[in-house]
Length: 515
Image 1 (tube, rainbow, N blue to C red):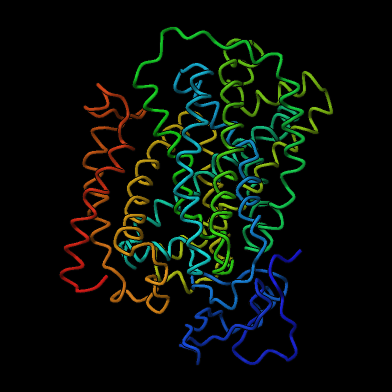
Image 2 (image 1 turned 30 degrees about the vertical axis):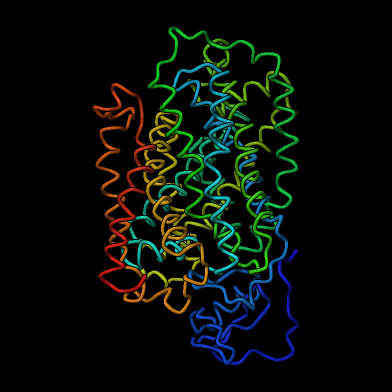
């Protein structure tokens, strides 16, 4: 079960030490520099037998502290593929994909072409960024401190927390709709959301090792269930709703921001899933694992969702099911009508397929909360996981009542910010730090004075928003530029952030005399 090499324990734990469950080693509560010059582990836990019992039972207690080289021993590199592929092989992309034909009103052919191309294109930044984590041993938000600083990173952390939490909300709604459709009128969607999130909490609560173990195998029953679903519905998907008019440039450009919100945002958390891997990890293999783990299942299932969405208003029984319980109810109608009680069983598997997605998201949110406010570093990660789960449940219940509107607005807006923040980070790392991971000095990871101020990145993001706002298009707002050209918010986010960050950061370096 263990992903990492476990060292044998030959002596009892000394006072002030706790077992690092990911590495099987004892972690001292002190910090400093070892005799060989390597920065010692700064991981601290509350001095209580209560927390040691959690550690002894396999719960990851480590928070945002960088992982020392000697503890980066997870050589099961395929974990990068399975943690993404399993969480993407679920109802989440099917539900999101249905929004392309229902919400944007484009044809299945056009949606399929744009989905596949854009998903692979926008997954490239995450595929590159994840290769930095084994070289630094840092969570993604801690790496971002070397661009946004210790305090300005709070804004990005808040947005990323909302983003990842938003995916958990979306996935839990999809799963809950399926569970509620097993026996209509028996299990409310609200109760199903709570069941899914509490079960997901167990995965996110346990941490890195259990998350990777679960995702290594959970894709198997889900894939079988999806294949059965495809077989059950395949002969009906040709009944696509005719478009009342040819799609305009506005609809097509809106898909770009929508797709960016799906994928680019993972660049802000990718390192969380590889920080226990050694510096010698093969970078190309990790990048490919990440690229295909995100883009391959997500794009295929989004296309499948787009096909279902395009037929919803052509098939009367699907229309009634959609109005009653969303896309999950449509899937339930398909399976139960075609397969009877066996279809109900498949529906349960599909409903629970989002556990890997939600568990992964709760895990990342627990670290991002600590980055929002440095004082939260004192709060054990497992407590933050519980808080995150409660918040997701509270948000998902009202959001489930207007799913398509909620998901399209949510994904488009977060795509804008992700474009600007990821551009600043990559520009910092590749332009100013020359792609040198040693420039992320672990000695200063929590030193606000030694780290960059973050004002350059913050200014670049804010300047980008001055161009994003008139160029964005959403259900609740359309800018002046977007009225004529369609949604160009994501494109402006990248270009303006890049052009603004370089001169402002150069000036900051000149004034400070260092990075």
